[in-house]
Amino acid sequence: MTDKRSFYLTTPIYYVNAAPHLGTAYTTVAADALARYQRMNGRDVLFLTGLDEHGQKVEEAATANNCSPREWVDRLAPAFTELWEQLAISNDRWVRTTDPEHEHAVQMLAQQLYDTGDIYPGTYEGWYCVPDEAYWAESDLDLHEHNADGAPAPLCPDCGRPLRYVEEQNYFFRLSKYQDWLLNYYEQHPDFIGPDTRRNEVISFVSGGLKDLSISRANVKWGVPLPWDADHTMYVWFDALINYISAIGYGNKQRFAEFTRRWPANLHFVGKDIIRFHCVIWPAMLHAARLPLPERIFAHGFLLAKGEKMSKSKGNATAPAALIERFGVDGYRYYFLRDVSFGTDGSISDEAMVQRYNGDLANDWGNLCSRLFNMVHKYCGGVVPDPSVCADTGEGAELREIAAGLYARVDAAFEALDYAGALEAIWDLVKAANRYLENSAPWTLAKAEEGSAERARLAAVLYGALEAVRIVALFAAPVLPLTSSEVLCRLGLPALDCSSTAALGDTAPLEQLTAWGGLPAGSPITIGEPLFPRLDQSATR
Ligand code: ME8
Image (cartoon, rainbow, N blue to C red):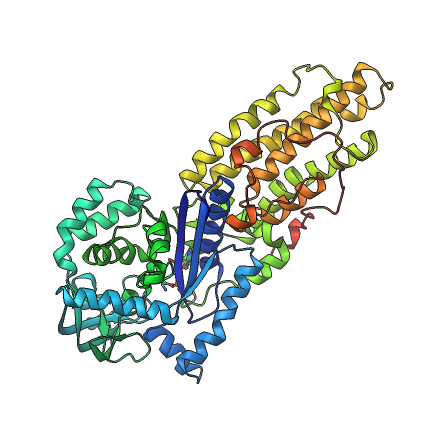
């Protein structure tokens, strides 16, 4: 077993009521980039994602498609695994809530809370949103207006669809008992919820008073049966949240060491739509079960299409496949992490995507590589020149200075989950390398006589630019894994596989790898095809 420090990162597990879309891919791509970064930074990463397969919403989707829920989830699950593979998602583990190990863990935790009296029988009477699988208190609803309109049901304050009235005998979790404890915990752990806007939102919600939560459904068959009352299935959120511990061995004696090594998680990524479940219910469940809480829960914003949240149920969700085909895997990943600030809502558009792709990737980065690699072939016989033939004239000083400060900037940005900031810092080096080539004009230096000082400078200039390219490729690898590997290969260096801690092996951590001077002279350079072929701006859709 590795002695690297553990870094355990999760995404929400997605409902299998429809195929994955840009929104679900957004969280997954962001988590993947962070997982890759942390692996390169020397951590032993466990990156978990998966599927939320139980509940009324999935049960109804199956019925609407004339099949059993089991057939339905099995039919849809590959749409997720295939998309994640296509997007180079490097999850170390994959959880489905229909996994027997998960179901066992759910039953164990529920039984424990039932035995301690934290779960008790009661009657639920109120409104339920099936698409969100969420209960709503009447105080949250605009009942008057809708009843006056003669509408059959109030609308969900979150997704705007009609709620259903539920009247059932079921079981409750004593959430209200934990209200003060939660408020105290938020106060003592200011980094527990991020960003601050979400933290404040959660604190104000909890301060408003918590009600006990119905955690079982008598009329939903597709779920984990309660161990002490098989007429009830577990409320889908209670079931789903437990994935974060069931996937790492909670409830399995043989996996106890793994569980204690990995838990608590370092980070749960969620969309801002599901913070109450993650920041209120989940911590209370864990505390009631005497388990430690995750270190941090970070909620990003929504991707907006023409000003509206993109969602499967609203039917305005775009399928990622067409964009991947057009922009490539790395082009796709880059756009969402560079153009949408992680933590706030972001409008996305085809025009913006083409602009980012052509500007940052095709012009700045792709062109730098192809111009430079061509020059090395033209002027240096296709191998990395030896810079020691030239005394340091100091003209590459700016490049070296930016490169030297880059690790600190990129690391701080990743720590702050500021992907756009990390990429902006990396692009400072890309731009400086382009400027350096322009200013030192290797094509003029190449005209000088063999053995002259000018020719020696040519070697130093090309070496400096090549070294900047190597460093950019390494820093950009978490976001652009395919093209970064390609660039390293074209520099004659071993490919870098940051898709798992094991694949990375004992490769030096990023700070060491990116120290200036790591590119050996004599290394063969391959020109290759354009990394990011330019897209026709007028062809936006
Ligand atoms: O909520 N913009 O699953 P889900 C950005 N099964 N992100 C978006 C988005 C958008 N327009 N739409 C969806 C569930 N997402 C539960 C989770 S976890 C124990 C159970 C992302 O399929 C975002 O991460 O509805 C959001 O939180 C998640 O998809 C919801 O996925």
